[in-house]
Image (cartoon, rainbow, N blue to C red; front, side, top):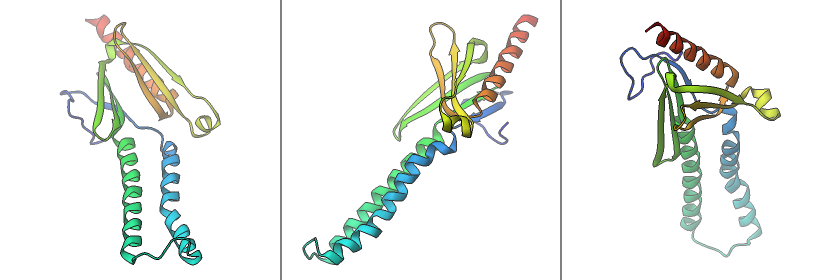
Length: 177
């Protein structure tokens, strides 16, 4: 249970049970790409200058190109981090909320009550997902509502177990009314 966490539409008495993001290992592809982009000018620029494959140009031109290169590289890293950090799924004692940032300017917000959840399944496939214990969780809601998808979350079997427990509590409360 995350301590000190709140969200915008949190109701009084509502407690956050799970705050889910993609597993940290899923960041490896864009982190490695960023590392290659950072190292690339350090290796290539001296080779170009030593072999004189580019005609002589003012120093400010090379400096400007390098500056732009690193500007784009760090923006690539920042955008990917922001998309990972702000794409979250929240499971509270009353609702399931899924916030997906499709890009920096476009987000999708979905929510449903625990009482409307009909089925929760998880899928783990491949060596990397099995080794690092992450996978996808799918939450099926009432007939005309969508399926909530939590992609590449850590410990998907535990997530399914917790949501199933919450569904059981919700059913007990409805029966006691």
